Every structure is written in structure tokens, then in C-alpha cells.
Amino acid sequence: MTFWDKTAYFYDWTQFYNRAVCRKLAAYTSRLIPAGAKVLDCAAGTGALSLAAAEKAKKVICTDESEKMLDIARKKAAYKKNENIVFETKDIFDLKEQDESYDTVIAGNVLHLLERPEKAVKEMYRVTKQGGRLILPTFMTGEKASFVLALYGILGFDPVHRYECREYIRMLKSCGCGKVKALRISGKIPCCFAVINKPIKGETL
Image (tube, rainbow, N blue to C red; front, side, top):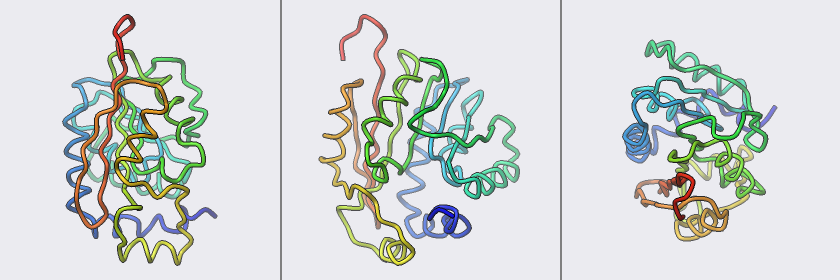
């Protein structure tokens, strides 16, 4: 059983601790979803950003490697009567879809957990349509200690990267994808809300 399977049933409680930041993440995500878009949410956890995207999207594919996380996401979507979300287990490094399959791809709070985040970014960029965007918010665990991070550490949480905002943006730029825009959201666990826009063929990065 993975760390995320073990913590799935109280994960949303830890997000409540950082609720001011999480509310902004959801609001910013919803704002960036084009009406009628097809959206892929990678490593979606309990589905907070999938639910935000579903407010405007035609279809959201909510994915995670933890089936227990997805079970909770399914229940939340059912409670809110979201019929435009489907749920799948999926590997962020090997998405299987054809190139340019999605208008928007989301990966919230996962890149700091990966040995090779650049590889994941490039794979998500591959399946993003020209003129689309990647939405890549990530908690800045390197900027500020917190009670929840200490508790997670006891349970086995050990992120590969403890980013600060500038360092995170530098990593995203090193992927050589589209232009990176970012906003730092202050809070108990700060977040760097980063977006990569994929240019239309013929446009410069």
C-alpha cells in the first residue's frame, strides 16, 4: 500500500488546514478552463481541481495511481452531481493518449514528488493541444515548515524536491516547453501556481 493509499481518507482534512490556499487554487484553475474544454487532470488525488475544472469543461478525465484517492474523488463528484467527470488510473509518465488530445492538462501538487518531473511535464505537454495550457500548481515545501508537513513526515511523506518558487519556475523553464507564467500564493503551505501555454504552430515560445 502506498503512502497515498494510506492517507487517502484524511487527505482532505490536511487540505482544510491549508484551505485558503486550496480555495485559490480551485478558483484560479476554474478561471483558466475554456468553456467546453476537454481536460486531463493527472495525479488528481481526491479530485479538488477536477471538480473545479468541471464547472466549465465539457469533459474532465480525473486520474491518479491511487485507487483509494479516486474512490473519494468519485464520491465527491457524485455528491455534487458532476456527470462530466470520468475516473481512470493512469501513469503520468506514460499517458497513452495521442498527441494533442486535450485543451487543458492539470497536474496539481505532484511534480515535487517525482524523481524526473521534467519527463512528466514533457509527456503532459505532448498530449496538450496547440493553443492549450498546462496548469501546474505545486506546494512550496521548501519555503515554510508546517504542522501538516511534519505529520506527513511521520507517516512517510518524503518529497524528492523541496521547491522554493524561483527554483520551481526554473525547473519548468528547463523543460523547453511553452512560456511559463507563475503566481506565488501565500499561506500556511505556500503554492507556486504555474501555467505553461503551448503555442500554436508557427508562433515563437
